[in-house]
Image (cartoon, rainbow, N blue to C red; front, side, top):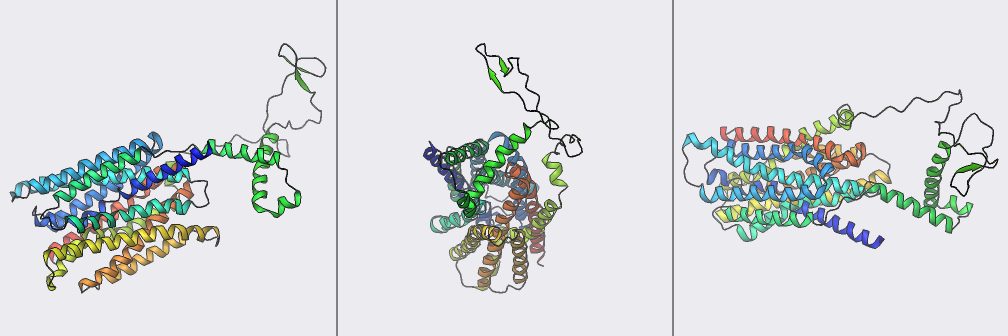
Length: 482
């Protein structure tokens, strides 16, 4: 039975990893974003408007999908993610295939709104897969010592998604004149992967697992008595024993009747099933009263905790995380969405052909994605060591990642040659990967795994605001030639 549960948990974890690997494809916008101006005639401001509204839908839908994941379970949300991404990518493919003719100026705004809506469907599907997978992983591993690495692996695959699919585009779709065939491929593979992952993802009932684990430890302690010296010399045995004693001692204290030194008569049952004491009278079990204090004062009833949203919005940690993501994720998202445009603009001084420019653009996007993947995976393990062995808060690593983004933007202001985009992509990939691994882990540990979907969904509104502001600033400055 236990081996079957482990097999189910393993399949569920692989299902979340598959969903995350095929869900983080919104950053692929940089690989075909320049086609909006080349094929559809969009200005850079209009192109960035499409990217910004897609990012808005991606991040603003996080609270909704976090709430639905906790209420409906991960299976339906992952299925919805596949359907949303299928519709979005198919719509974009159709637009690039059939709407490449010159358009009247009065109809241009309708095309911008339509493309924004289609890319918003892709962003919402990506966030649905992200929130359901992360909420499931946070809940299933909330009692594990390695919750950081357990969350870090799916997060790293989410960052690796852009690297995988941009490499596929550079290998098999780069010679296409339009991205229509590539977007159709993304529609099919996204829908198939999420529908397959939904068949295996399971949200465990951790309360039943905790009760079963406690019962198993009590049975082992009953069959194998522990020597006192061994109990205190072995920290693991001592921790297990103290946990068992604490559970039984709590029940024992609740059954204690205060201010009474009289012994209760022994209680048994007669043949009729009535409970009688040793004197033969029908026994009356006194009600369980709360434990009185030293001054014979009954403690006041426990104050009911306010809903998580009210506690969350009054916590300064929540506001610090939200403002931090607004300030430090916005410039990173602006680079991710516009690095393809930067490559094409800076390639005018080079001798690269159109196909080589497209491959160079895909390599920049793949480089950023790969180092985002590597940093998510590495920082997940290192933050566990940082917290458990060094006894230091994870927030220290989060601040270091923010300073790395400041340094990357300083380097971005000094770029002159095309080759300088590679180290910039590395710095931004490491910073973005670290931030988006540490922030959800801190959220899960601060407000609990059961509230992860709602709390992290609210905090991820920060990248939507920051990315929108930085994208519009970049687009306006680009069109004005600043």
